[in-house]
Image (tube, rainbow, N blue to C red; front, top):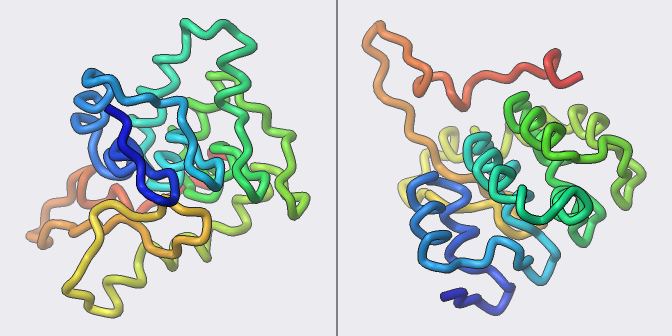
Length: 184
């Protein structure tokens, strides 16, 4: 139930970038949320990077059975660059993701290989935002719905905002807003 590719990516990681319902289906079918890619990316890294706060919270809610030490060890896993899911959450500008990880016990003092703290990753928000908007400027017709899984993957999942008709919904602004002030 846990097929992987040559990089250690399994279908659950792809689902974690785009859909809560796909994640639940994969988990109910026996997918192992504790496996990592060869770059030591966990499902929390991937969902946080993909700006999926509900998926991060879903994974965190399934950690209760691990006990405090196991839960914190999972939440604070570092990838090959020393980054935790909290680094990606802070860089994403999504306070809901940051809050879910902190409530699950994430340590905000862990430094990555460049000696950056998770909150220092907020300074990288502009560069991250460019990755999210670059496909719109390029006018790509081939767009990714699941992306950003590998550490050096500079693509992000495609989000096609609905055509504006004078109404603004939460879905319309989901990827256009950031609240770094709430994170800091």
